[in-house]
Length: 117
Length: 115
Image: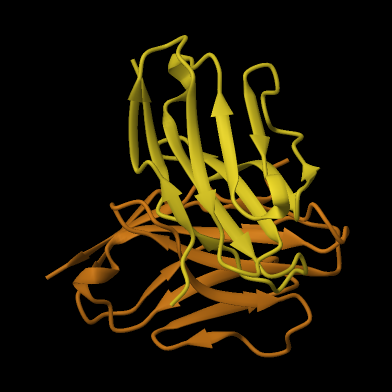
């Protein structure tokens, strides 16, 4: 079964506007972490934001915020005031806490974001 | 700022040849990961090390792939023989710990093309 689903293959946003990238996840483990990474065309994976399953508040990091809806199993990334440099592939990933070791990151298929000037 | 180092950045090889990739994690990071990312897809874990021990290699094609992390520091991933389907980005990552909150830091990757 797909653990991480990103239903938007590609998104366009106008510069300076906000955009939401969708992510839903599937787990039966009560302890897990959700991550968003950015991958520019150069290929490196850049960590953006983290949300723990027990965190009461939505995570925020500068222009990035994570809209965490636990009951719906969704963890959408919101980018405010989009910039041209935000154009990249964005991946949602989950790490389950069932095992002390071997709790790998499982990635979604990604969403390509293009910011228009 | 400390970074994960990988080499080479790009590698072109012919099928049936051997190829090796190197990764040096951030100093002090006990956990090291090798991921394979096929174009247009998310990364998939190939192997995870805790110090020098393999803790997850369930997705590693062991008939042709091998990985080692002697002394628990840097790591080498080898493919022998390479096949056309191995063309992908190979990403190395490291983290301080294995709890759910520990961020994984990724290297720049090695882009492999098999001809």
